[in-house]
Image 1 (tube, helix red, strand yellow):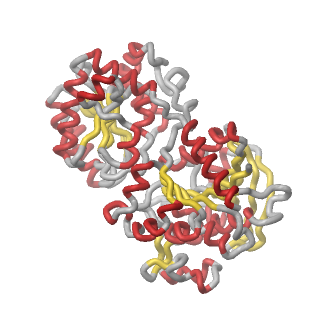
Image 2 (cartoon, one colour):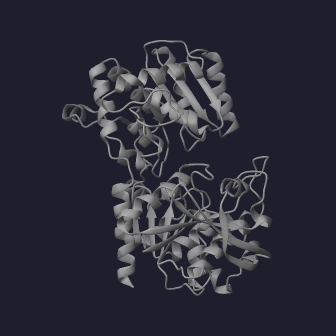
Image 3 (spheres, helix red, strand yellow):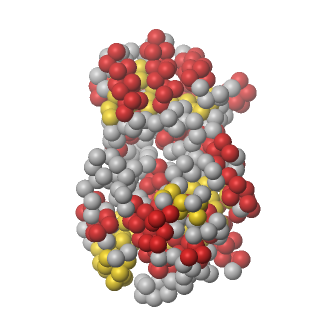
Amino acid sequence: MNILSVASEVYPLVKTGGLADVVGALPAALVPHGIRTRTLVPGYPAVLQKLKKKKKVAGFDNLFGHPASVLGAELDGLDLLVLDQPALYARDGGPYLDATGRDYPDNFRRFAALSLAAAEIAGDNVIPSWKPDIVHVHDWQTALTPVYMHFGAARDTPTVMTVHNIAFQGQFGASVFPELGLPPEAFSMQFIEYYGDVGFLKGGLQTATAITTVSPSYAQEILTPEFGMGLDGLLASRVTDLTGIVNGIDADTWDPQTDPHIVRHFGNGTLKQRAANRKALEERFALEKGKGPIFCVVSRLTWQKGMDLLAEVVDDIVALGGKLVILGSGDAALEGTLLAAASRHRGHIGMVTGYDEALSHLMQAGSDAIIIPSRFEPCGLTQLYGLRYGCVPIVARTGGLADTIIDANEAALSAKVATGFQFTPITAGGLRLAIRRAFRAYSEPKVWARLQNQGMKSDVSWAKSAERYASLYSGLLAKG
């Protein structure tokens, strides 16, 4: 079976969040099921620079006013197709934002072009001797693909639309519609018209053969007004086509027994080796040495991620004898508040703004617990990394966080199945109580070690989820 996966980012080429990790890891997990995936991504400068060997496999004379090439390449086991169109992707900023942090004004065109290219590849004879059996698209940036396919030559090819975060919908003014090259009837409620605007994600949800989200709980949550972000009614009408499949992680990249980014390797039976990573973490963040737990946060600093709740409890963490290390960037006000806390508690709170892949690995390997207080979280990957590295997750009870962490209540502790701490309501008070529970557990070394060991035994790989995707794909083909 051949799958064309279409995404705006893929690890290790370009990454702004968990989407890239998912798109980069799933293809390898599907190989044992006889599924070959080719991943189409934009030709950002960072992508083209990292691919040393690439060859042209297809081309477009006029794709949104400019010529474009499709380049074939391989990297780290990924079979890649790169849409090389300098007029749209040769930018100095990131994938979505310019150097000043603002959206590119032509983002609608940049990602419509990616979607149209995917739809054309799904048709006949664009890439010689290759045609996908199914097209799998990710988030709003590629959501026009099934729309273009509906009105094009690949209308009968099944499509899967995965929603990684429904808060990001790709909504643009109606004035962009004439540029999209779609027939007039596409600007209607049945396709991409959304309250008078053009809705990329809305169009994908309307036209895709199947819809998936990245956890079973999130699949249920987005059917409600609270979490559906205006699309809950549409999703309710397609509930029989909606599936929640929890994400996995790349167990080779995130393996504490082989990780090149950490100071000392360790495993389930050698937890004492984590001490060397803790020491390196203390040095990296200029923390005072002490016996209390080290909590970490690796996150975008936004309201959705609950970072304002974190800001309300940092003083409690220090007062209780703990330390906190933070890696992230986002809302300027939240950055300022957390930096002020780090200044106020020198030696007890450390913070690095931005993102550092190697540092994120060390933080998981050297911290005792990771705090994830998201108000909503489709799946989340950092809690899975935490489980893998014996860094006990403290999570809000929502979405994929609720699906992947077993709360350390009395029953779960007695049964020896607990892997972390959940909290609700998702407030500063709820988080504060969860942190106090973590302190109590940490004060009992055997209890804490059991939490770590149980977490490290959790299957957080893509194996089970890839099996579910393989079953979904097969079902779509069986329907004809």
